[in-house]
Length: 404
Length: 164
Image (spheres, each protein chain N blue to C red):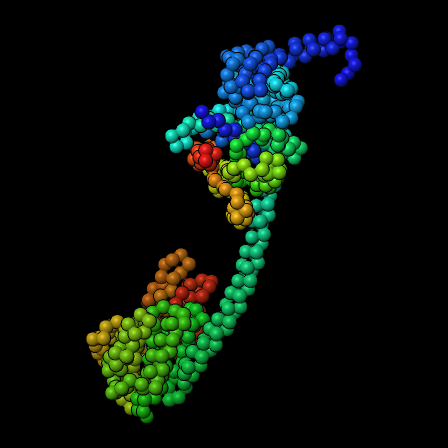
């Protein structure tokens, strides 16, 4: 203890008493409250009644008695009045003294500082968690980006491989097409698929020494499926692979073809077919159509031009109805004359403004006089491309010319 | 009447005061007000046919510069270790406090409250850590002082354990 004169000690005690609003409680060895004094009302303890068990009136002493450590201090305890006190315990042999010293002002100051510090800490912890989450999300994104790049690479490889396979298929389809003829009459063609693999195919060949078959197939749609069916139908006609069928009889050929290529068993695809047979000795052309545009006959020498006459024939598309019937039509081709067989892609051309090319313009181009060795097929193709404008044509452009 | 001292301990800002307010006064405030020192409340509960007075010591949270005063736990019949489920570091604090308390007051019953269960989308404590501590004998309960979820039940559960 400080060795102070009594007057100074007394002054200090008075100072403490005035500043700290002292209150005191005394508990005996039986843990009964035996005395309570000082500014009890300041702490909301003015209703205490000495005599009963201390812990019933003073919950904070529950469990603390008997005191194992003296002096013992509970700092900043909020009292029933809302004031805050430091609670000092002092024990001797038979009693426990409890002194309450008001520290509300210090408590408020400490609380404000602590509140600020904790708010800042909580904010920085939250910020750290957010940064961690962002970094994790960033890593996830980077990984996803890498995977995407790898997928893109794989897709490009697959795309390149498929493209190569399509080119191979296109070369195969083109190789299947017959070469132009110059004897005993001229047969020429132009074939421009709208995609790498189109739905058009055609062919011509001698059935026997007298009969020459000419045919054009247009499968609905484009791409691999349409091209496969188109090539298959052309190959069937080329190889004469229709049982009990007279290939000199166009109606019979289309009927047999229709039986063989019903859409239910061919990927829901159907096609239009024009099939004609020219008899050399008589000049007779027998032909039939399965939903195909009519062929055009232009009579007269090419240099003079002439009228384009459509060779009408009717019949449903191949593959739609197994009961379909096809009638032959016929006409005599007298030299000089040119027969044009074509798919609808040669004249159903959309202009950039959305309007469609007129069929009459198409026939007029074919009937126009030919000079200086010019080909009406090239002229027609140029005309179609001019009308269409930049970019590939929407449909396959296929036309065969037979010139007598 | 049976009277039992129960202390609430844990890191700062985990919701100890809010849990007491929810349990004693059935109220909750979103505003965070830090606790300095100690606040003592009394709540009567019924265990079986008997009434029991719970003396709740809401002790200021532990932070990096001030540790929980273990001497305040003297005479406690049980305690609640409170953890903020959205702040994994508060589980570390709970583990640290538990190791110190164990040495001071021995095997007193306790329950660990995973508080702020209402913030499920921000939950950040790995299940594996909880399973490891459960295997070591820790009893976890999910609570939300905000919604009241699990609060009354957990205090009642601890009171029932103290009455045995």
